[in-house]
Image (cartoon, rainbow, N blue to C red):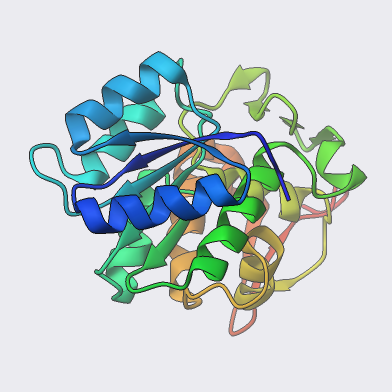
Length: 235
């Protein structure tokens, strides 16, 4: 377990907030609380927590906007965010991930599930997925540095990649020529049994290609299967 980490809980329901903070404290985490989006943003900037648990249905600034603001701020953009919401439809999950969330948990949830998700996201943010996740890549004009979370195309830094977009690009570029199904991509970047269908990967790929510009053509669609990154000698 990733211990002694600070978690900011942004939740307006006092009972749910108390339940979450109680269980986090009992499992070795330090907690901060915010009852609305404005306070959540303020505390994220002040304390730079290791992770934010963010409710979507908040008074004032809604959770999606809180996520956008945190992820667009140079000082807080690297803080992992797990969205917690009663909205569990696929489009709600996709929208949350596209906004920059690192995970999405639907209410009601079990404490063990919540703790497992938190630990998984913290380990990913710390680069604890094994040696491969630390290796820099340079291929076809694209440079990827996992430790810096930096992507360059022809020496120009690509800004505003979401966590999922970065992970997908790194996965594909580190295995040029390999074909990954959509579900394999989900399993690789999120872990087994992540509750998002294959359509969400398509959304992430569209956003990734757009941000990469001309280099987006390096990610090929394999009809009926998934995606692959072209091999260096491939035209």
